[in-house]
Length: 489
Image (tube, rainbow, N blue to C red):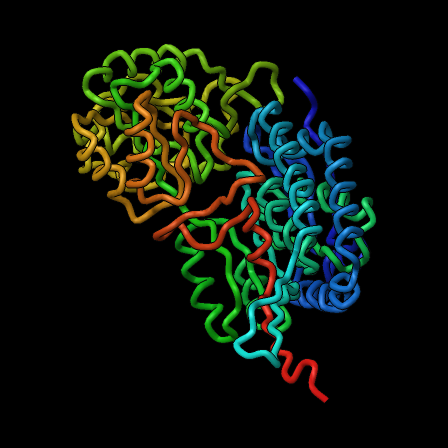
């Protein structure tokens, strides 16, 4: 097995890598073993304030920097991430747990946001609108919103950060980044790539702290922070919406998901099984867009379940740095508790355990947060797993008969982030895609995220889009300029 990292990192404020005010630090641990793999400064309110000061000071210069120069820095940052992929991925696996191959894939995915938004930086066009009379001219300008706060989660510590920083930097905004305290080392390594790519001091700033409430309060109370981008739970997202009201701050929110995964009886079953596995068990089920409810049409239900069981039972569970590992640990013991509660509740209410369904606590698993990859047969609306996001390697199967029935089942959720279905009927493909009440639809595909596509949800999964041609709009203000009396003396 490869060796976990041992990395003591620092805050990045105004171009300097420094300790927290007062010098306090917190440990970062490996969820597979509980061992320390590094430490970070436990930032204070003064540190957050200093980071905002630095971002505000850097804003005029960065905003005035030609777009082509901002784009060069972003492309160089992407290149550096790829050059340092082994180091970044090892740090990610050490602090987050995902299999090393997945971590390396995330580094590439994260770098793609810098590359994509480098191109978007060069295409921030305004427009000239038709005037209402012959003496006027109407200009429409698109300008950076200002200082941005990016609050990022632990499940994709590189990609969720670059998905915010890429468009922010491209638009001419400066940023303060607050990563999850479980996975701050990855964030520090990515920001070192940005710094080494030539970003001026203060364009990006990193603050780590165990006191997330203090960080949020400081950010929301400072009028210079005009935009907050957050990825995390719906409950925290609602708190941020309330906090934004006093100063009417702009928000982008990518919140919880509860994705349906539909297999129609005309689907390619092997493709559908592979798609569900890619969606459900990637990162041990700890993704906002992973399949949480699998609906299988009655005619292929037994065949699909058996094919899925055969694949899941051979998945290797282990430390993310161990060769051949497919399923790593969950982020902590609370995540294991939640997964097991969902499984036990479903079984108590009539579901059948197909495979898995237990904590792994012996031998190499003794000190980690491991849960066996699991399949439940016969999930119904009475079970918690039908309505609550599990965030673990647990797939629940539900049988359905008609298209109308499964659309109603799929849409029966407060969430609306991602959804999936498999069919060979292309009339059905268009019809179902239009009827699913989700911001993202994967048709005959289990992996749907890409830098060139608009990512985001509806209902209580949030608002705003990250990625695609519209992703940069979240970081731009639109200004209308009326030029009167043009051409008169």
